Length: 154
Image (tube, rainbow, N blue to C red; front, side):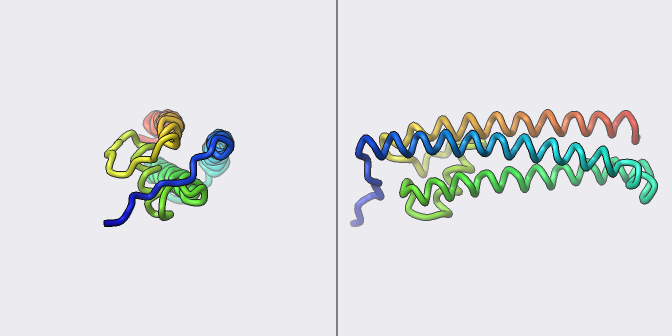
């Protein structure tokens, strides 16, 4: 029978890993906000050309679909970033396990089949809070886009 995976846990390492996790969370917030604002700029800049090319009805649908795809890619990349962080810090045994844990935690599914050992489980609420805030931001962004499409393209 194999022993469960347990990373090294001396005090200075715990402080380092938690501080670095706050830095990762902050960087991901910045990237997420920047990518949302960049997408908004692209939509505003190309809106007229898209209408001329495919008409107002299809332009609206295309913009909403593009937003869904872009936001999905952003969230998958954020899961991968957390997964990479967890794996490289030695908190999960593989990159895929780190991604799985991050995805389940960020989306608040919380299956609990993969958990971090103490004291690393302090990262779980941090990852969950960042995920929920980013999903909330993405939802608000999609709401604005769909509202504009509803008003101007239907």
